[in-house]
Length: 370
Image (cartoon, rainbow, N blue to C red; front, side, top):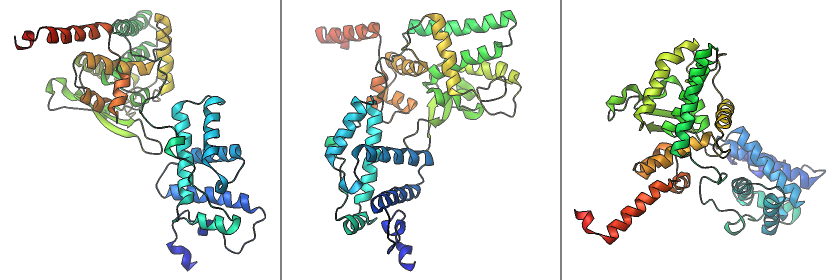
């Protein structure tokens, strides 16, 4: 026992008891490898959901390869990856995540720090080797790899959408329907998603206290900055926080009106959530999607427009209006400028205007100095 004190978590010598005869040694060693890998990852404070997902990927590859880790080869990874894409029709990002999990497991196995190479050599006269390389796994070129058919709203579509959600409020109030509060909440919610370039889940997790003053925008009052506490997380990590500066005064008017005149009518003073249901709970992302889809269908807008299109629209319209792309990247929480570029889809009018300016600058340089 004294010798084990200095061994790292996940060490083969801690997972396998020396001198014990194993009835099925190959299966026992494989299970010990997975258990040791789990302990090694727990030491890095990774979430249980992440650990279970990664273990499931490794077991999936084990079943596909029909071989134990000390017999895995790059060729088997090639065949498995081709099956994920061709037979299972997985997306590029999903395949890359699977490959990453397998890579992490095999890197753990081949590390002399955990002594699995020595154990495998002793018991099976073979050692695990590196089977995931840059040339047989999918490169991570961009952060965003969703359906390319998704696009931002045109300005005309966006105006129609906002007019429609406002009309639903008037209709509910006029009919005396009890859904008037919910309709007002939803109309404000969609304006705030667009006005601050939020993801659906980010908007759902907002609290009343997430708004702050911005000394550089005193005219916006207490709504100059928005603290997004539940930004998109990297795999296995906590949600990424960011602060979003308010760029659209009309959206500030909308949220202030909602907090002063509508949110108190729900009668949930102790609930910190910005968007609440009439039953007292926090509005969930799936409910946001359901309401958006209903309005989109009523308007006859194309199905490629989703709640995420409002975020796309924020990026594209800010670019068209001359906002610095670097600032937009920071506001929407993109780690790579290439992701912001994918979100950007400027209108044909904007492109034509920019083309005309470029041609005039080239053909008549005097205009630049005039």
